[in-house]
Length: 187
Image: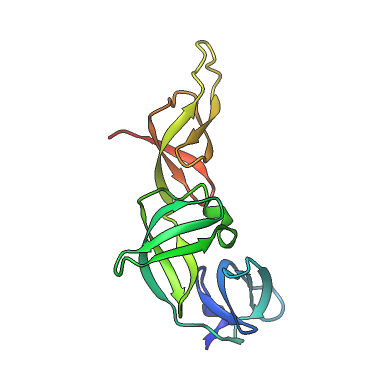
């Protein structure tokens, strides 16, 4: 058991017999009354999203999870194919469980995966990732309005708004939470 006030983003909880991952957490301390926590929970198995409000002193059932490294192999349009790096066991994970990761995951990269018993609960994508620009329109000479931007497509299919000087074949760093351009990467 864990106090609701101790819940953090990424905490695994058991709600109504189902495992859920905390994807958002907001602590609220009103001027009157007791403090409470507003959490957004997601079930990896069904994709169901719950919004819960709990008093900070309420007890919630947390679950013990194990983190393991998984290499992302590919997706076939319906499933992500991952391989556990310690046992080389391959997993087929429905893309519907993690639709927001489809354009963020890169073939061959290793990600931290959270398991509860034999069930995959979460795939941890780093906050900042370097992508190769696969498609970019050429900048037009004279189109130098302050802050001029354009959209490019990365090798994973992710569309990102970047400064106009970014060209096809260059590498860019992207914030995976907001899907926004951070900087150009020079190797």
